[in-house]
Amino acid sequence: MKNNNKPKYNLIIEAAVDVIAENGYHASQVSKIAKKAGVADGTIYLYFKNKEDILVSVFEEKMGHFIEHIATAIKEKENASEKLLTLIEMHFGQLAANHHLAIVTQLELRQSNLSLRQQINRILKPYLAVIDETVKEGIQQNLFRSDINVPLMRQMIFGALDETVTNWVMNEEKYDLVGLAPAVHELITKGIRAS
Image 1 (cartoon, rainbow, N blue to C red):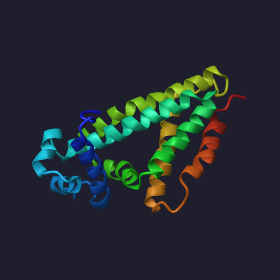
Image 2 (cartoon, one colour; image 1 turned 135 degrees about the vertical axis):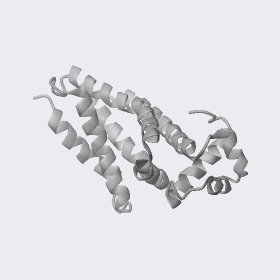
Image 3 (cartoon, helix red, strand yellow; image 1 turned 180 degrees about the horizontal axis):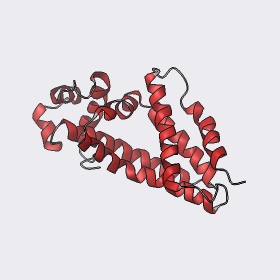
Image 4 (cartoon, rainbow, N blue to C red; image 1 turned 30 degrees about the vertical axis):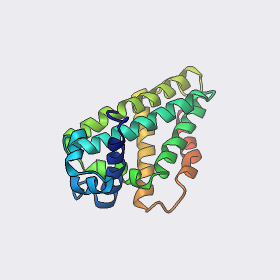
């Protein structure tokens, strides 16, 4: 997270989410983002190098808050299974609460080039580390099987959440995403539960 203490930076980030969600990344000119934010086109370049930098910053800013909220919430839970349920509920909840952000993260970021995808992967690393720690804790607590391949399990958990949200977005959010959290949690934990 960079200049998040500057009001115009925040205005541009919020405007970018809306403009990219409504028009698609490729059709979202910097001038449209500036207009939506109520700033001059040139003001954008005081904060961002280019449109790609705006998209990366949107993800970095939003994902940073997303990870902070999840990390804080799961600390209060007793065991790894409860932590995993909270993580799933919050993952779904935070995206269900922001229609435009869900479109940007699930659809627009997927159409990006290799350089952009590498930057997105860097931003995701702390979130993936939270999943790793939760799985390891479950193993230590004898809640999850001791033979789990943690990196593979992380991929499966993140992949399941990510695909569930993408499907929800593609289906025009016609059902309760957060309501799916217990079923997703049950499916994941049944496969890794210690006997």
